[in-house]
Length: 189
Ligand code: ADP
Ligand code: 5GP
Image 1 (tube, rainbow, N blue to C red):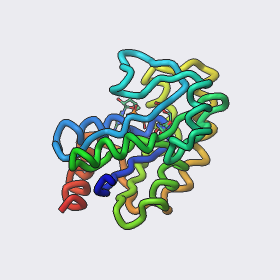
Image 2 (spheres, rainbow, N blue to C red):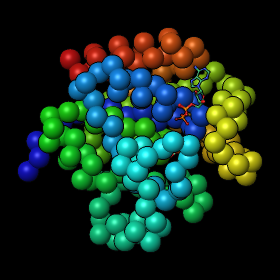
Image 3 (cartoon, protein in one colour):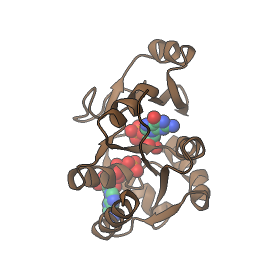
Image 4 (cartoon, rainbow, N blue to C red):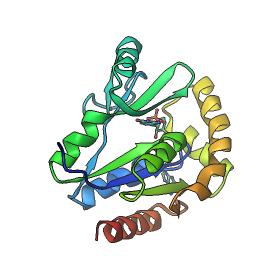
């Protein structure tokens, strides 16, 4: 059996900056390894299979649900599934590393409940919903329809912040990255 390790969960509404912060941490702290989620959405930009996500068909995703291969999964947007494979966490713990997640708010709370005591759950907070919308639009990766779906979900998700261990304000990116580094370093001990 794999020896269990630690987990660091970054959750936030889409556009808050969690991917940017998680990438920064991965470049700075060698003990961390990214949990590559499975998703049914197509790759965007220069995303790569097996690096950013495991891009799989809906059929395969449903098959893996039936086989109970996910620690958690969500239909994050209608018709689009995202999930964490059990084998992914084991793969990282087997290397003696800490798992770092970039995951939606519900998924983050789910993992926090499941691994309470060994997980640090961080909520990335944007300055306001207006700024979040600006960032998401500015990223230029989603169609108008997809953007609207993300804004509606984001408004609800912002209310979940107090349920996380820590709220990390992402106003100025450099400050947020430094704070994230300090939080993670302290947690790793
Ligand atoms: P998420 O992973 O939470 O959806 P991203 O990390 O993709 O968010 O960030 C969304 C967009 O906002 C990206 O274009 C990113 O470069 C930008 N961004 C992130 N943090 C900041 C910040 N503090 N100030 C301005 N822009 C930011
Ligand atoms: P995106 O399409 O922008 O990459 O991700 C959309 C949302 O799905 C983000 O909030 C992202 O964190 C979340 N997400 C990514 N992987 C997972 C996962 O494995 N499980 C859950 N529940 N959400 C995920």
